[in-house]
Length: 337
Image 1: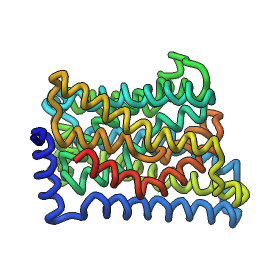
Image 2: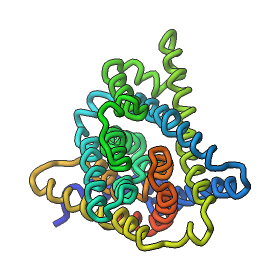
Image 3: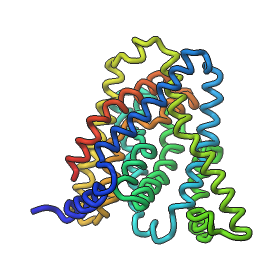
């Protein structure tokens, strides 16, 4: 007998396919864009447009300004009280899944950067576009709720994993964490701002000014994804081609854990929670599972360079895991639906 969530997801999927590309085609098209932008960065480094110093500056611009702007603007436009009350477990799942990956990665590899990459899925770019293709605005909201928990995890356990130390005071200097807290806080205590962010054209008076500010933040934040990919490609461009493309044993361990072990563990945990009586929204369930199986986050190389990790390994892991995701993510989607 089919489980209730299976029927719900199947109906949602069927409805989405009627007017949007199915998930496999969506994954393929998004991955193609990722690889193309990585190629631009590689060409810029090979053509000496970018060098090591400029990559460091771009990494700081991206991590400290562009990505926080994107997070703040998108959270304001999507989060509200009823949403958090109904899907509270989505950000909580990120607070569990990412540290679980870092903990397991550290024990598997014994290396800080390797563990960081294993526990860092691409939880924004690919999931956001896949969820929007399948579920529309509701899917986008679920991905951004996951992002809220992931941001807290990244700027706490993630940075501690990468740097080898946990400094509570350093958290207060992390713009990504501030952007997450501010975005959720403002959305909850100032619902009118969230409404203006969702429909800036209808805002009037002082609220129109606030909506314009949010819109400017969102526009600046759109730099984050292509900039991350360009930096990753430029990092690869600084390596000999044979080294950039060679899947050594260290890289293979990272890829196997990121693309196979973590989604399998996540699937097992969700099945166990459902057996214990926890009712999950079918859309949220699918988004969480797909996110668990995503390739290494495109910001992985950026954060590795920013915080003193092995940026070369991170760039290769982003490239290889993204290519391999062409096969693993559609198979995961078929398996869980």
